[in-house]
Image (cartoon, rainbow, N blue to C red; front, side, top):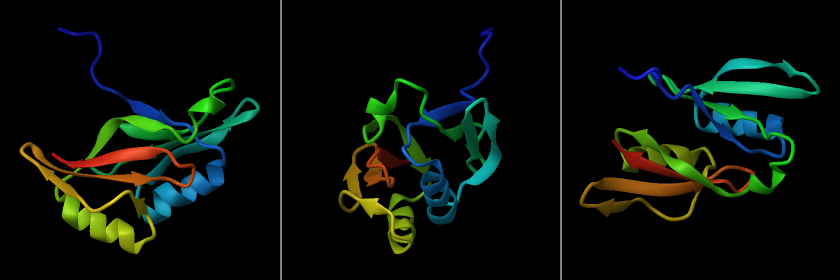
Length: 122
């Protein structure tokens, strides 16, 4: 038996937490789980409806060079075409339309800081 039970959250480096919070809640549809001061900084943890893993909008001091990079992971949805249409209607910038592969479909989108995310079918 493993002593680790799940991935609690993954962090997204951002330059403007308010702008990132608006993007992830208003456009993508995530929910705020925690938004509170953490010393001189702010800790924002978002929940993904139906998922155990959350996203944190936080850039540790000294990691500012990671803002605008590629998110080393994949976000999942049931229907990439549907998600692409809905998110595009809300102003989410995609690199192109969904692409089909033997394992499923995927599309890449960017947040306001230029971080790139893969959205793929389960």
